[in-house]
Length: 103
Image 1 (spheres, rainbow, N blue to C red):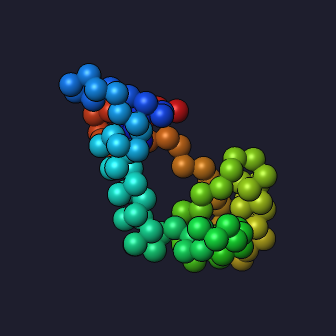
Image 2 (image 1 turned 120 degrees about the horizontal axis):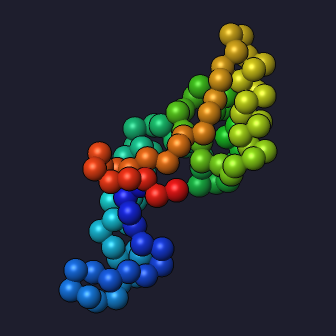
C-alpha cells in the first residue's frame, strides 16, 4: 500500500537499504500505529488471541487474519446475527490516489 520494498531496495543515491530502513516501510508502520490508536484493530492482536467473535460482534473495524478459513468463519458468524452482518475482505489499495495498488 505504501510501496515498501520486499527485504532490500536502493535509495535515491543508489545505496542498498534494508526494508525496515525505507521511508515507505516507516510510513506503513505509522499507518498501522494510527489505526491501532484509533481503536480500529483488535486490541489483543499481539497476544495471538482469537478475534473472530469480537470482530463479528462489531467491537472493532479491522481483523488481520489469514485468507480462507478465517474469512469463512467471519461470514458464518455474521449470518448468525440478528440482523445478519456481512463481512468482506478489503481489496488492495494504495496510500495515495496516484499510485496503483500492488497485489
